[in-house]
Amino acid sequence: MSPSLFKRIGGDAAVEAAVNRFYEKFLAQEQVNVFFKDIDVDRQKEKLRYFFGLVLGGSQFISITKFKEIHRPLIKKGLTKSHVDLWMSMMQETLVELDIPEVLISEFIEACEPYEAAIFDTAS
Ligand code: HEM
Image (cartoon, rainbow, N blue to C red; front, top):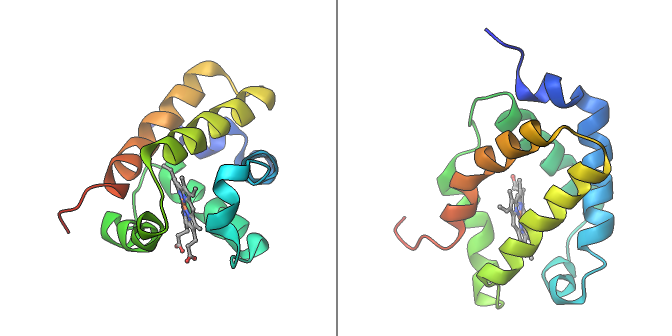
């Protein structure tokens, strides 16, 4: 069995660097600030590191249902596909900046796709 994407990307240190850099970039965008007004960003970073561990480890333990539930209130606050596209493109940019090989980035983006698609899926 080949090592998990998590290991190939560089393990805890790489994921921590990516999450920190990602939030620095993403939260600097005026159009997404509103969604994070009452959110503890340190706690949020912790959750995203955990999410990466699961997604990149090849097992999807975070249920799509829970993921949908968490993002549903944001739709009421005006979340659109353009925000999600921004999320994905800034994450991709971050990984490029950190010199993660392109093939691993593609694998990562693919692993995020079911979650991305779930955000606006209205069936529960
Ligand atoms: C495919 C894209 C996305 C992924 C993979 C993702 C990932 C996550 C994860 C893992 C959590 C924590 C879930 C938990 O509590 O266990 C979360 C929560 C959250 N996400 Fe996303 N997210 C995405 C898109 C977005 C976008 C576009 C926005 C806003 C512009 C956003 C705003 C938030 C907020 C505000 C929370 C915290 C909700 C709360 O604690 O009440 N997310 N996201």
